[in-house]
Image 1 (spheres, one colour):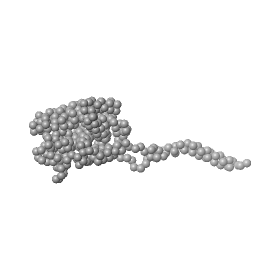
Image 2 (cartoon, one colour):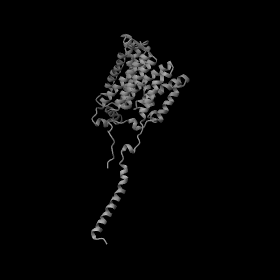
Image 3 (cartoon, helix red, strand yellow):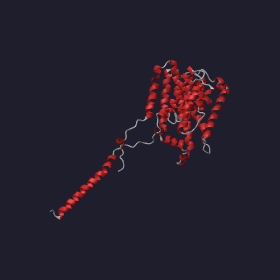
Image 4 (cartoon, one colour):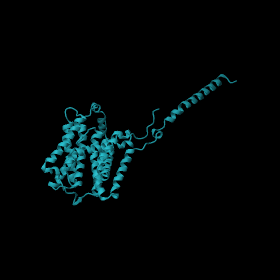
Length: 372
């Protein structure tokens, strides 16, 4: 028989092997969970960039297949998409209900029309910056009055204040002989680039498309920045953002002014494309129209405003051509159904809430591993 030292060594060996076996059975499932996060979860495709690329590709190819008169109409729609972006930036991201967005759109249109009529200034590098500047100045003046008071302004106060400003500008233009009164300012000279005239057609279409893409990218950069994060918080809970130390009213005034500048740029493009301006460009009808664009497509996404403007204008063109007597009723019922059953707009069919909000800040470099 083995002695006591041999028995002790055998018992120690058996206990070590049993302990090792127990550790193996306990740690094996845990080890399988310590895989890199990127390897354990499949990467999801983002819908928003795909939608943006698809819309851009279709818009770039449209003049190749459309007739001339449809290209002219499509150019008008692109300009209205730019106008819709200005409202989506103000309302969809900052929560400012501006029912008078047409004030900046129409005032810029009248401004460049006066430059062309009285001073014969039609150079593109002068009139388009002037249009954006006019929209910026008017939005700063109105925004300073409505937003930079001693106490925070309510949504209703800002909505009614902008609506009143739009209505007052409409009535002023109709009664001012210098602005053409009810007839507006007709026969605006075409916009020029050097000695060449930029007339309606494919050239103007691609000009409007290029400006829309540049403004869209700038807006996308803005809303995905730290400033955009503050705007998102402002829309969701204004009191909490103020508690964090942000000057809420100043943030609202800044984004209101940026939206006014974009609307002014759209108004300048619209005036030269149509060849005349009239008081309706300043009024309540176009202000309500841009609200419907954003509601229909989806607010707070930028691309939703573009899609909403394209669909509404396209459906309006088709219905007015085929159902001349009842097309406003059909369009109104369609808009009502979308707003009732899809409050987040058509884009909510394909875009999830997480992607609507977006991600902020820098992504971590490399792969992270789960904590042991």
